[in-house]
Image (tube, rainbow, N blue to C red):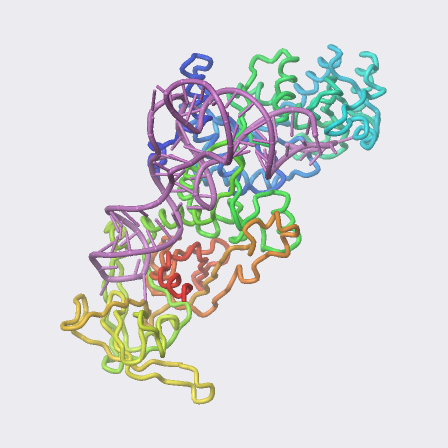
Length: 559
RNA sequence: UGGGCCGUCGCCAAGUGGUAAGGCAACGGGUUUUGAUCCCGUCAUUCGUAGGUUCGAAUCCUACCGGCCCAGCCA
């Protein structure tokens, strides 16, 4: 599906307006944005917001958006993440302008600029230990004090810095610092470290470097090198903006992007922190970064979320500067909305209860049903109707409340797409007393038409026991029991023990074997997708993306 | 308690001096061979609080209250 569905209703949030003004005033004739992830984990729903913002703005204004890996900390990064991130961006429906970029491509330029800074007397090699550096930095309320190395000669600084890169010193022995203002109320300006020694192998540059630049120094210069016009980031970088500007003001760069901050996405009942997500993965609480219970992009994809639903969600939540927590209901609305329109319908019985139709013969009757109640373009399918069916246990109640209009002894219900069925007799297990079968009869006059003289309100789904295909169905629920798992202290304590319920003995209509769709609505149950990893022709596996809205459940909950 | 930022309906969020958009949720009602979808309706005399300026304030001023971020050689 094209993006047009959401483009025309593109919202005029504050960043959109800033860009519009910059274009109208002639400050820029075109714009360039960038999405700059560090490849140290998988992307999550919060990154989707940033991706949609940066790529979306570029699309709306006919500009360009770069994908740039901010790879300045080789110890934490990995090629696996680079590949996964690039895949996620494309899956969401975006294509970066030009090649994939890496901050590490600019390491030489960054190094040369550092030498310029030293030559200008704006940077120096500091030999304080990490702990001493912290002490000298001061606190929130007290100014810092200058490092004893602050006034090293330019010659010494040049010599030391080149020897740092030459590998002559151990990690931690020296760092390169910008010389700004140790008394600044903004701690980021108290002579920030811009280079540290790391004798690590880098996934892109190999073993060439022994010194690696820090984020604050790297990001602004990388933006400038790429001609970024608007450098959009989250609120926590606001205090870094003076440093971003300071670095670019010192150097002879041809462009000085404007950093603009927006509030990151928070979603209740979930975690949007790469660090914490990584713990869940590393410590085995989930099956991997793509566990369908995780709100990683890979997890959402495996759960059955579509790119369009995620894009629409990102648009619906808006872009602003106020901290906020978006309700999960909004995410669920976005996927229901998309799948309701596009997913073919099919019947699947999750918890089978045998129904024998005593007044029906042994031959199968192939009934035709449309795959979508409103969209004929999704086609039709054949459903076999036979003497022995399975219905869902949930759709039968021996002693139902008055407002229950599914099946119960002596009552009638509509078999979706087929006949009206009456339950005549309940068969029990002589040992346990459990209901194991329903002897029923159909009204042969009710195929495709309503019965005369009575109204049958309930409709239930069913499959032919002789033709249905066995399948495994995974029911997912929210992963955390707390609205704000991060505030609950130890978020491991509030993992929902029922976040995954695996049903191994479900039955789905045989037409599923001829349908190439990956997303379905299991009628009256919810939206499900084919599990991208474990499904096979001989062992069908489906994941529940989200339930249908269920007003009956709501009525019951009120009782 | 230094600095930066933010407070508009249960949750997002427009609005930037002319008298509170929209979405989600919720709640009524209609249609329905999915208790789904769809459709119709209800849902902030009030914008963190208190003063002030003004014919007129969510929008301007002042003070206060509440929340978030910053003391990595992480990003």
